[in-house]
Image 1: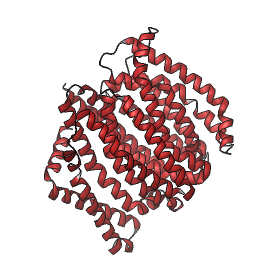
Image 2: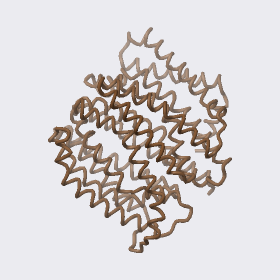
Image 3: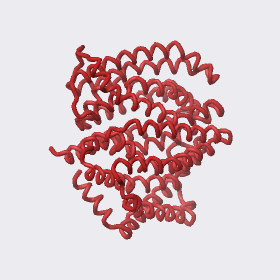
Length: 478
């Protein structure tokens, strides 16, 4: 099977994993939002800041090193596995003993037991990292998809059942723990690799030299992505964090649906093309163009339809999340094209470049959040958008230095999708202003969506018919 066939097959199963899993997650999320209050979401979001930060240190960047390496030996895998196990156990012990300090720092005693229970997920995660990396390296996304879908269904049903019977915040905690436990069991079942004690300091240093840059990148990427939650939780409280977190999580779910699918396949596929710059450059053009073709109208459509979307699916009590979601969709548009910049830089073996850029991003975005939090949630959201767009030119210049982009071609490939999306939004606003407010909310939402799709595809077809042809051809390949 050729690389192209493997990549397309991997993309299909990555899509099944991401889209199937996210559709399930979004459905469960809507149900839980109906059953739980904003404070419950805020408490778990606040606890997850610490939990997710500690989680970064379990893998040490070994997974990306395993995926990227051309020559991989058993000692690489064994060394990575046993180091992960040791670190996972150590981090659990440290978290159990320090949970009180973290809770007291936020003046939230209810955080202590939540953090302690969630820390039990560290050993589970460390048991599966190497197997996951091997499956990704092999582009075996079918196994990963099956595991993810089953875990999402079972953990989601348990969470909803507990929320319905009055368990409150613990329904969210239990859902996360069950999801991690099932994923670990299933990855061992589908993977044929088993660890041995054949480890090597030389091989450890080999993957560590690459992985340490990934680890540093993840630390600063985390501070970029979660410093807003930290500052909102500290200065504005858990209820405000609940409103913000729900809007942000919906954006994140949609981003992963649209971008995560192809990005998972992009890194191993790009890595195999790192010695063929022309093919690598063309692959980069193609994946960014097709992603923008799908992502631009969805994000801008969500911005236009956010009031109806929130009211219909979450309920009236979440209306404070509407302006936050509308603003954050503009970050989603940028992520649709910029996330593949990281994939290129990792694939060609320059993780230190991404690390330096993430350090800069963390400083700029944290500063924006720190200034914005004094004026409330809308200001924090706006600060995220402005900071992200200011940083983007630096990211694309790094990609240009590695694969010599033709900027005219690169920017021009987004024209049809962007113009079509703007015309689509105008059609939504005209419909809402003239007819939409006089009919039922659900009817208005459905009609707006149908009109939006028609206007978008017609606009793109008139502006750049070859893009529609390219998308149809890609669909036939799948």
